[in-house]
Length: 205
Image (cartoon, rainbow, N blue to C red):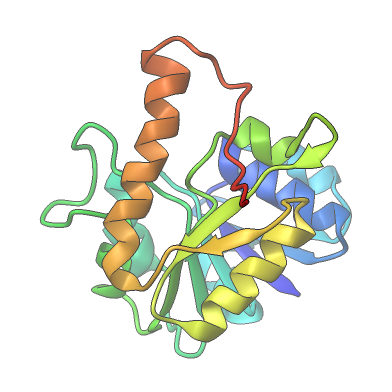
């Protein structure tokens, strides 16, 4: 699969590396191809560097991993996204996000042509994307969005990255719930002092 990753920091970089290892084609989309974070990602297999719009036009899937306050600016920078799947990994934390929106996915939908927007890969730390194995078993990922096609692809990519399952939390009306779920992890990890080395796995009786 051809995946454009916009945002080459911790989360974007971890996903780029995991998917490269799985054999996907990774197109890093950056504002300045001379100076950007994550240059070491170009050492990964199947990975090339592009302007944002060039990466988007070549890709089947677009992954947004920039800081939440940039959600509108980044969405507007993508160019024509008609027919593309957009996976949003961002979270508004402590009110820091796009003005006028309660979550980043709604901001993206309001500023791009694609209707296939899925919130995914936002509910855990980047360290758990790098290594999703605990006690010999993979942890779980979660997703939300109205797009059936988008969620099918998000699930495939989650499993490809090493997660055990990607659970469906519902439609677009669950975008904010996904960010609240993410804040539960952030709260435990950073505010309650638990540290980053824990994760969520759904178990059923």
